[in-house]
Length: 110
Length: 116
Image (cartoon, rainbow over all chains, first blue to last red; front, side, top):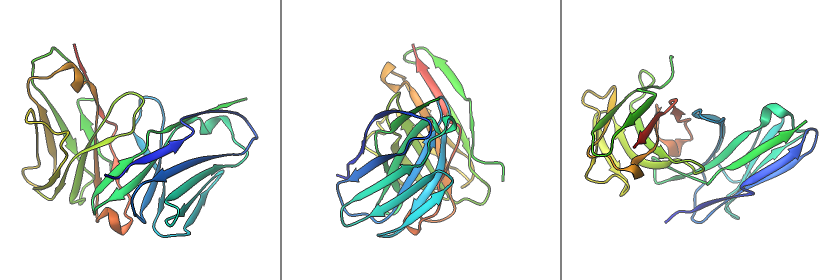
């Protein structure tokens, strides 16, 4: 059974700092998604990583995928308050199912 | 493209009652998914349709749950004889191609269910 684990689960940081969220998964997959969720809201797609070594960047967020290590990272550069949210990674299982991690609740303080 | 639409957005029901949620996917998306999310957890897969065919169901989908997509467009998720453990947000999503091809899956705003 595919398991997806994120760490940390809670992260409080100051504006301007850099940090990384880690996503480990237990079985082979080369398709991984990152989503953002604001309180009470639905999921917003951030990145789709399709192959080993894939790196994607959007603004202050950069995601990477290492399929051999079964690890993806979401790096935040020079955090700003607007990035406060819960971030989920999700791994594709089979052809159609996403298995999500527990989420990382990120709080960025002024 | 008006996005994935779900209704009702919020539903409070007494234990034992039946509830039904509706999902309208993005037009021309032939793949539709239902997920369930409880507080503090990631979404969990419930079921998947390709056009009108229900191709996969999670073991989370007990006999009290039924999902349909009669004409390959909108979908309904019905929960019969609701229990307090059914309280969650039910998310619908759609996509145009297989996820393994790297296509984005778009989520709706979700339907919150509270069973009292």
